Length: 373
Length: 230
Image (cartoon, rainbow over all chains, first blue to last red; front, side, top):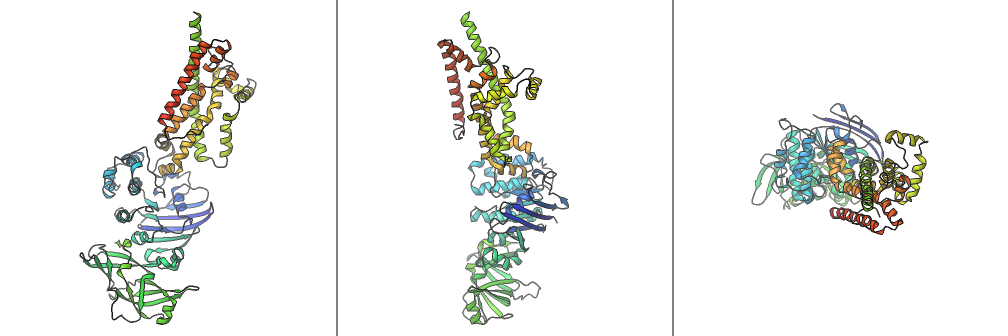
């Protein structure tokens, strides 16, 4: 288990950074916050590029914060900056070899990640002899990612890597990163603005605002909290549910998931039989009823118990947290967040501990946000 | 015999001029390159101040620079003593005096194109290289230098050409001593003064053609680079 403790305090430009966090897992940690909240600064500081503020960085027991003793080129991180750069005087393959040569990485070392592995999984074969000038955004990104990993970093820091990438590429790369992370046990710190990306690859999430950490925890815990809603606007609030694939209809292109005994039908064919698939459901896409509907408006009917009700001031809406019924009698309780009008809440006379029936249109389930685990 | 003497005298000036340009460019590379790097990446508050100093030789009359060189490198002054210690000669009327004057006079021509070239590749390229585990020296030699090839070429060519064309400062510091400090520009001046227009034509025409070829080479290889110096 790798652990990274970070403390940063000081003024950089208009931002007063006062950030402290202990990253303690081998998974993927998302760093999320509004523009200018200090996300990229944290990565720069980890890389050793900032020495004007108070810094304490301890990685696996080693103090790294002194930029004289640990200059940027002697740190164990692999960094992908926001505007990734390839060396234009070198071909794609030479860009990769540059890192291998300069770091004197030996191929016979079994634990090291080989160039061949990256060429295969990032589909770089046809790019190797090309010049960086002629690469598309997505191609360039794959090469930069491969080059960053070839350094054999102990921790990967990625600053909005997919911000200008089309959806098709994005999905592939996210799968690559997830698999890479699992296979090599190299933790990743991942900055993104995309809720789809968070729910698809994030394990842990740290929320930051105005240079301060405001919340942290597992993605499924944080995504439906108010602190997350404050950053994204309540409109984007959502819940992440884990389900096991129990059947697939290849003709109709739908997958049925088991959520602790209840069934959820989702569009597309994520995961394989018996895999755990994570789906994101936006709070605003949920309909509630106190009794099961006789005429079904959707196949997706879930049963749950209202655990909290928050009526928002000066707004038409209320937020409800519903605990999904567990028919399997294991202790796992999944939470679902619903956003309905206060008018509706009053009219239905909903209160705490009421049993409700939840209706979700399969169409509204976010297809980009599947994560097979 | 007379003609031969004149030709060999002009030939000597040509050799001195070329030697001066080569030696000056060598020292400019040593001094001007780190200065351009510093201006492009390191300096923050001091940048306008240093940039103004580096650009001064562009606007000052050569005689002003020549005058201060003579004043400050007078054998009586500490700087003058150091100069004698290093070169074995006093500054005035010596070849190394010419070199020093040329370095100062041409430094903006080395620094500015190179600085622009460094700024174009940017801090991000350097950060990327460092973050890939590559140290500052190797980054400079294997990343910055190849990427700034055109900048180095531009700096070299225009500094070289500019040194060939110096007149005022070399006359003032060097005194135009035949076989020692007399460069082409001064030879031409002498020929014209003696009304030997034929000999002046040969040297002036030679300079014209050489300078044109040098600049043509520069612009041919540098189609996209804008030379900042006017």
